[in-house]
Length: 163
Image (cartoon, rainbow, N blue to C red; front, side, top):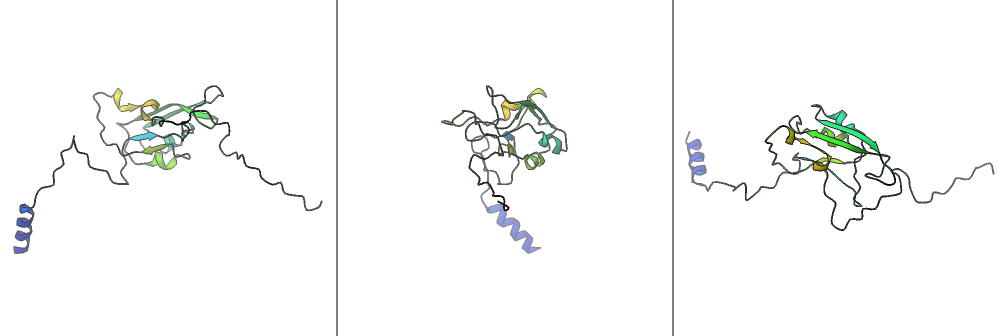
């Protein structure tokens, strides 16, 4: 009993740990799962290819993806398709990270932003423009001509052993 009383008195005499929240923000842990972000390549093209594997993996059905075809005039991603509509209903999202795990191009990631507040239901649905990370300063935004999975290096052709 004296040991417990000593611990209580010791803690009562220590300076309290207080963080002035709006002005000072604590850094989050490395495994923290916050607001979703759609990433881009270094050249400015979107990583999302519109495969909708993230929507299939979502247990709460919070993600909606609609894919469209890329053209040479309008290229959004290096593949054949891109996500023309990408929406996440943040009221339904449980921040499990399954969408992040299912994405083959690592386009969707759960970032470190934790300040999420809504005044109405419409503002809780994040669309593609809200989720996309802005283009970096000085990034070259010319479309890539190579398709994913195709290599530009020369590969030696195997000789037929019967020749």
